Length: 295
Length: 295
Image (tube, rainbow over all chains, first blue to last red; front, side, top):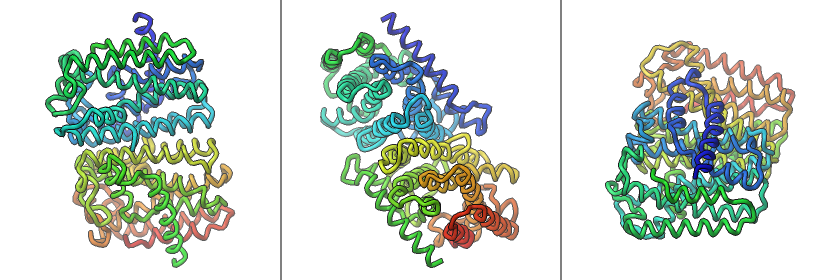
């Protein structure tokens, strides 16, 4: 795990440097807007999606310099989604990563605009990435847009999630929600790394299967943590799912079965990796990390 | 003007067909989300930006089939911005194009997500436009993102506009707000037509200057209409600017001077056109139309 921690720290450093260079400074007008964007982007997130992109990219032989902007773009999409998810009309949350959410700190209007601008900047960042060929850039914009949008991406998942509050849903419904809401962006993070590395289409498919299961594992452990950890440890409001009467892996399976499902999904992720004829040690460690994470 | 009306009707037909093909149907889950998107996109808008893109594209010799998707993408960005602008935390408006705004009809959460998804789909639409080379696609994504985002695009302008409510601002401030808020997207609509037509960089610059003035003209006439027309004619709440204590060309100059400024700006637009050595009849008519529009 020590090697993995080092890897995560390195990825965070690279992606934070990119984000800092790409996002207008607070001295640039409108400074409130840029302050709000920076507040949310530099909140000490795990940078899991960028790390996954870097790990896959390096697994398939991409140069580090070719991965940084795409990683930053994916983190921008992630940050925009958190800002909008936290809004009063959505999950109505005051706390994120141990501090005030964007709309509590900057007001609702600015938070909506900060999310909007981050999404725009994400696509601009890829389109203007001169390390990549135009062909790879349009492929990456297309893949990330499909994962972030509707009918089978993040926004669709968020809509399904909102509609499922207080409603009895099936395991299949729950899986569809999460596949869209978090799975698609996690999966495309891995896929983007492989695309930039010019992996062949068979390898891209294998890595997408690995990442889809990884996304599922992430969501199950997320539900477990929400049900078992404190707000202090998580840095975000704990026990929220139960109060909102949200269907989760814990509410549908119970704690013990949900834990077992996590173990089985982890085994499936490990199984997918065996099919990839590359050095996948790091990708395996990321799966281990997600299984064992405490926040 | 008859020829121009025919041209607008043709553009609307083409862009609406594109939008209908690109936006998931209401039968596709999550159907509420797609219903909300379609409610806002197919609300009988003027399709001014697509028409401008078509007019410029044809002026510089682009084929009609190469312009349709980019035009649809720009209209998606426009529609997303209107949905978010109308939200309670923003301009809080109930009426748009003579009917309920998206959040009144579908709820705030769905309206936020509908706007988000439309922005995503806009960039996806350009990235996947197989009529254009990858090089043109990334250029168009980049230009539209810059016009839609911050620090010198639509979202920045919206933020500045919100911050200016109830505050005394200068003419220069007002111009900066509008240049960002509406001018940038109008300007990039024209520019995109020229880029797709593979116009040379000098021509792209000339057309951008034409469109920047056209955007200014549009804003001045918008302020005049808000101050002088009824809600029934406009299909959106009239007299809103004065009630929100917004600085406008009318509040800063008065009706008579604002009208004169519109005439002068129109003359400037006409002047820019003379520098372009192409058949610019249609582009001139669009300027005339914006000067004389009644809603």
